[in-house]
Length: 79
Image: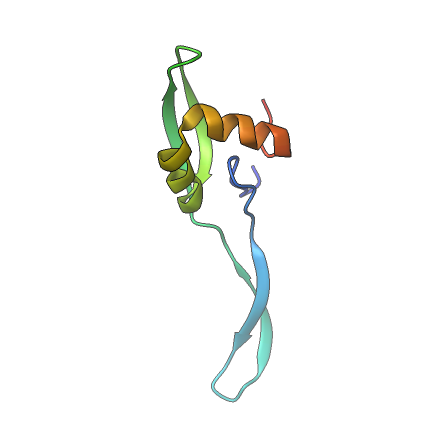
């Protein structure tokens, strides 16, 4: 499974590892992902999502139903 947040769409970024001698080699910055279960009151069921830390904050801020609708509009959520 790809390491992509299903709420915000965040995925791994590519950058440089810089040594003390300023030599640069490619590296990957992974996303801070969690596999979380949420109780969706509107649908009366439990759902399991791959959510980043920023996605958890968004769910806490606007609510699960609004966050899922927003993610579905942007195409981040595959049902």
